[in-house]
Structure formats: C-alpha cells, structure tokens
Image (cartoon, rainbow, N blue to C red; front, side):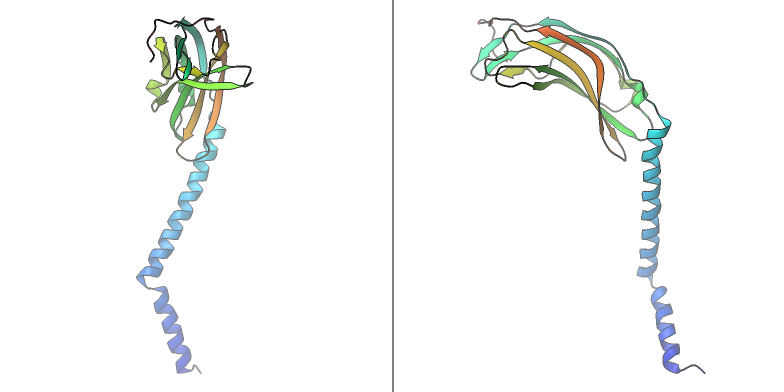
Length: 191
C-alpha cells in the first residue's frame, strides 16, 4: 500500500519535469548539442572534400621609385604586377581570404625584416582571381637608414578564414627578388 507522502512526492517531481523552464532548458541543450555536432562535421568536411590548388603566374616588380630620406628614416616605394587565382580555396565553410604581399630583407641590425606592403580581403569567388597591373604598394617600406642597396624578396601569402574552424596561413611558392636603389632622391617629397 502506498503512503500519501510518497504519492505527493511523485506528483511534485512530475510537475517539476513539466515546467516551462525545464522543457525550454532541455530543448536549448539539445539544440546546442546538434549545432556543435554539425559544426564539427562542417569543419572536418572542408579538410576531407577539398584539395585547393591555388595558382600564381606572375609576380614582378614594375618600377622602383627612388628612396627618400625623411625624419623617420628611409622610405622605399615600388609598383608591381601580379596574377593569381585563389578560387579553388572557396568552399561552403570559407568566409573570406585575407591576401597580402610581404617584402622581406636583411640588414646588419636585424637578420629578418618582413613588412606587409599590400593587402586585400576577398569575400567571393568572383573576386578571387587577381590581375593587378602597375599596382603601387599600400604601405611603404620604412627603415632607419637600412634600405639602400638592399635585396628585397616579395612573397604572396594568404590566410583562410573559415566560418567554423581554424584559420590557416598559406604561402605561394613564386617569389620575386629585386634591389633597392643605392642613393637617395633628394628632390622627392615625403609620402
């Protein structure tokens, strides 16, 4: 025979399971579990299903402007031509690409100097084919009297920014090395 106190405790626990907040919590936790599961599947499928083959055909320096000597030190400006196709990087988990051109050089003070001289954010496949002609650098090379007669190596890099997952940096194999002028242009105005 059942005691009245047992019956009231069963009724109380049943009522607690049927409250709106308990049901909402169960629904929310189930939704988050499913969302996390499919997010992991989305991230993993981008690695398994896609083998990107980005292509770069041209990277050349068109013109090197004379070096300017300012209060901040040497400043070097140049223009370049570049053709690259990054469309194979796009898939359903890619939000955008951050593409940038770096200039690296060695000085007596520092063994490695690497500066970003141009960048672009690519958000669609249509914009992922780059064909730049006479493009001037966005960010000048600046140094403390260390830029004259330096060999500079240009390299295109990009960072994949997925919707879900880790960002990865990739480097294009084609590089271009050129030499900066050995003297100042005293008539040029500072940028």
